[in-house]
Length: 337
Ligand SMILES: Nc1nc2c(ncn2[C@@H]2O[C@H](COP(=O)(O)OP(=O)(O)OP(=O)(O)O)[C@@H](O)[C@H]2O)c(=O)[nH]1
Ligand SMILES: [Mg+2]
Image (cartoon, rainbow, N blue to C red; front, side, top):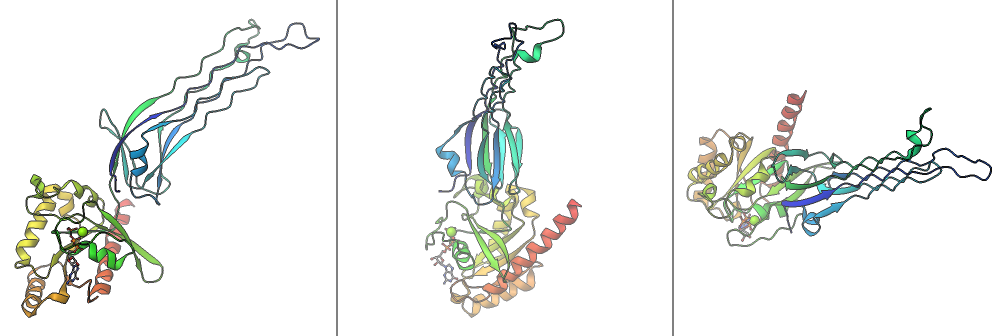
């Protein structure tokens, strides 16, 4: 199951109380204060783990509490600190305060962390309060309280390539052909209800990720079909491939509809680098082949014909994806510099 939004509550550990104690030894009549400090409460940390691709774990468990610090003890012994709790989430998880909706963190890179709730400091024991004039302090500090928060976690997949197209265009078939992903494929619309991520092995040592998205239809931005909610997952793909099947009667108008749905979602989506891929070329007749050629001539973006069934054009399609991702990555890199 693909889960892309979930609310969790987190609580850090309380600090352990400082201890009030006086040294008692056989031949020392008046021992000084020897109460140790309390231990710090555990932190709650969210950690981006590249092995995870959904917030499913957090759907099943939504309360997380770190351990409290242990109180201080006599003989100046400090209490043990409470254990931190580490919540593993997929890369691409955006963390918000569930009340204010304020964005607190965006865990994009593997290993990136967010300290969601810091553990309470331990209280100082009475030994720390001894001064030259006040040698027998009977006070110690309580530990600092824990912090509780409700967090909204939202996953926005990070893929290199996003596949966008009408239902039934052959998006899932393509991803199952070029990657090990095994999405459901069927000859009816809206087979894919949740995005699938596939890793495409490229040449010997390289790879890139492709997201197969649910089908888009005209009026999706007004809620038709599955709507455009899931387009949040293409917000962070580097490039888009717009898939149109060779059976289409009118490539240009299909393309215009799809482009319009993308720009209705956000201007940013429509500015992403993209090209067109015409699918199911194995079943294309002479007429469709000619229309593909006409489309190529009329557009100033690339048009690439392929078939997942016969394999025609698939390897060149991978090359195209790889090249466009490479160009885009290089320009992002230069922007960062
Ligand atoms: N002839 C032919 N049929 C194909 C090809 N690729 C996909 N199909 C068929 O087209 C139908 C739809 O394929 P899917 O991959 O499920 O399409 P989709 O774009 O993922 O559809 P949704 O998930 O509903 O949006 C299935 O019956 C596939 O077998 C192809 O290259 N050639
Ligand atoms: Mg599909």
